[in-house]
Image (cartoon, rainbow, N blue to C red):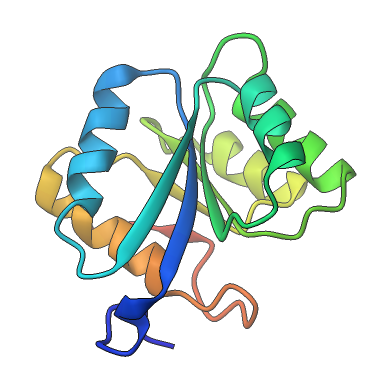
Amino acid sequence: MDIFSQSFSLQTLTILLVDDDKDDILVFTEAISDFQITIDLKLAYNGLDAISLLTQIQDVDIIFLDINMHLMNGFECLAEIRKQRWTLPVVMLSSSNMDHYVSQSRTLGANGFITKPASLTEYQQTVKNVLSTDWAKKESEFYLDVR
């Protein structure tokens, strides 16, 4: 399904962004602002906040989950999400693409991993690629990168 098509644009896509870096949140928000779809962006600033929010709302379509955060990091949060048997897609975010980050993300049950792109244009394309992926069919590479 092409979520950027005219027929989909009447629907709302709910994204949970879990990140404790205000600059990264600002860049993500800017990256999705030009998309021709309606996005309901929910924010959590650490893994504990994300788990709390997920217990309160049921309509999240996808989670973008930063790895390095205080209180509960992304790996701990991902483990809790899968422990709760929430099956929604989780894409890990990191400023580093170290092999052990990628492999640990896969092992814990993430659907994908992206390195935070350096430019806004790259970020927009990366997020668009993630949102265009049919995660139920697992048609995508685990590691997504536009560079």
